[in-house]
Structures are given as C-alpha cells and as structure tokens.
Length: 141
Image (cartoon, rainbow, N blue to C red; front, side, top):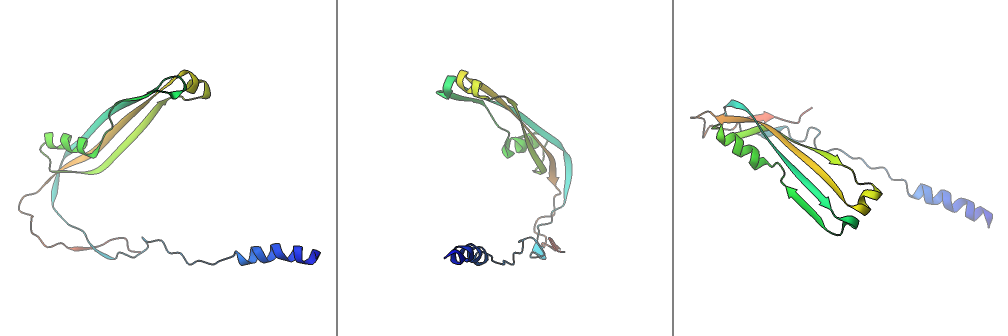
C-alpha cells in the first residue's frame, strides 16, 4: 500500500510533462511585407500636455475625475497648426503624483496624472500619389 502512495505522485509529475515547440510570430515570418513608401519632409516636433486629477471622498464613497488625457488627435491638431499632413514617432507618457495609503483611503485622497505627448510632424511631398508600392524586406533574420 505504501508503494502505491509513493508511485502515484511520481506518475502524476511525469504525466504532466509536455514538450511544446513554440515559435514567436515575428521571427522571419513577414519577409516581403508591402510597406507604403511615400516621400515626406519633416515639418518639426509637436507636443501636447494635459493634467488629469482623480479625487475620492472619505471611504471612496464619491469619486471625481477632472481634466483630460493626451490623445493622438491632440498631436494631430498641433501638427495641423504647423501645416503638416501627418505625425510619426509618437510617444505619450504619463507621470503620477499622489499617495493612496490605507489612511488616505479612509480620509479621502487625490492623485494627479500628467500626460505628455511628443511626435514629429511631416508633410507629404506632392506628386508622389499613385506610385507603385515597393516591397520592403521587413522582420527578416
């Protein structure tokens, strides 16, 4: 009887072993991806920032959110003011300040989020529409 109890855990461990051949999807799978190639000129950098404040009453009974976040469209509006057609190299960061310890949750708390977005505004060069898309070797090893 003791032998059975000693063998059962070993069998359960061995039965759970499985070998899986996993290949990540971006390892040479997209050799000839057609990327649209358009000529453009750099107009300049654009940025946008916004502040969002979250407040809670004692015991978090009432929560309020004031302010806004930076979105892609905010950066596009800034680029349009410069006369650009599009934006590239977009980065949106968020910084948080405030604390929410147990005592703060009981007495009420406030947290501030500062959103900052940066991008490069570009203008497409005229006369390039309708050109054939050149296959570009992408993601190949």
